[in-house]
Amino acid sequence: MIRKLFSRVFKRGSAAPAATSSLATIAVAQHGIHREHVSSAARRTCEALQKAGHKAYVVGGAVRDLIAGIVPKDYDIATDATPDQVRAVFRRSRIIGRRFQIVHVMFGAETLEVSTFRAAHDVDTVKDEHGRVLRDNVWGNMAEDAARRDFTVNALYYDPATEIVHDYHHGVADLQQKTLRMIGEPRTRYREDPVRMLRAVRLAAKLGLTLDPAVSAPIREMAELMENVPAARLFDEMLKLLFSGHAVNAVHRLREAGLHHGLLPLLDVILEQPLGEKFVLLALESTDERVRAGKTLSPGYLFATLLWHEVLANWEARKARGEISMPALYEAMDEVLDIQAEKLAITRRVAGDIKDIWALQPRFEKRAGKTPYRLIEQPRFRAGYDFLALRAESGEIETEVADWWRDFQNADGPGREALLIPDSGPKKRRRRVRSKKPGETVQIAEITAD
Ligand code: ATP
Ligand code: MG
Image (cartoon, rainbow, N blue to C red; front, top):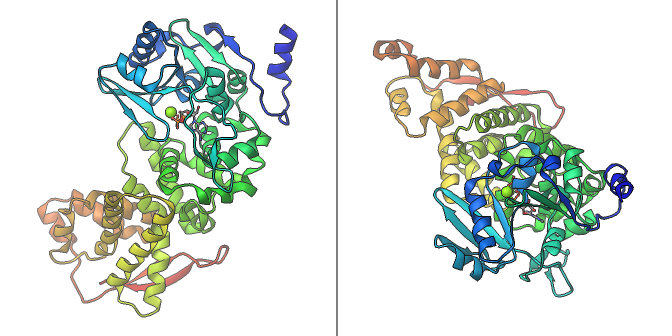
């Protein structure tokens, strides 16, 4: 028995067949999660369900993160109680979702997601023509629920009462060996839900795991299945990736995996262009720093950076066709956002924030008269200025413009007056624009500030 376990833990080659389920109960000495590490809301939710005669465990990402020494963002609970039974146990709870009902349980500021064990897929499972699962709403037992999850490290069930981890797919060993392994046959699991390709890359970046070759190998050829994923779902996953605190790492890994096409122009075109790449990586680095420092983040700002070089290219092309500068910029902004809307469900509010930041950019060119005073009062000035500074840092524009605005903000009344540049009609400013083809040297174009 010990030999069997030993060989299972240490000898499972990367070409191992689909993980088969065999329950291991793992004690605290091996996994290290003491009940005090779990949020009190998650603990109390499990206790209350168990007291009412149900099974209840902390499951998924939270268990994985706790073992890896990361503080979980949120907690999911899995139970054998039906949504109605869960509802009956907690006064502050409500059933959400139509396709597969789950219950939100509120404890103070914390909300826990409680879901009933799901059954394995069977012949009745509704799929689209590519094999993507469209509907399934059958409840099952814990082993079936575990088999439905994506990666072995995500199929761990922790009972705060006993401090035992129930592990059906060797997830604890995989986590300790820093391997991300799929439950079941990766190709089949990607066909059921192509978002798992994105999740594989995101989770590996977050946890510093290596993708099992069986997990990484099919991604390049199956990446196009992402096209069938509903935009809202893709947007959620992309936001998780970009705001994970490991965005730079994740983006590099997406590229390595061959998954950067069709997700965002950021990953599609820009990363292949020297200037755009520098700009995007700087933006992602500062996002990662902010996440790690626990600061707030605006999706609008980040998406404005990711799509900026698309807007620039579109804008330059319009001006080259003789369109007038400002209207051309607005047309370019709309066109780029419309293309994205097909892939990513950017909300109206976020789209508004993005456009505000872009529209401010040419206005920074004016450093005469009353304009700078008016600009600095704009509600989006700070975001617009940060964006300008990033453009300068990436080499897209001269640093002198960004430095000027920094000085203007910091100066007092007379200081600001002294900084103003006398207006001498439309100014020509030299500006670098990115080259049109990868590998081509950077071209310098003239643009007129208006
Ligand atoms: P994060 O730390 O970013 O929240 P997570 O793994 O917890 O990562 P969630 O989206 O919160 O991600 O999902 C919770 C759990 O649900 C996962 O750990 C996994 O067990 C299961 N799960 C999520 N998405 C899928 C999927 N596409 N296919 C199978 N199981 C999934
Ligand atoms: Mg989670």
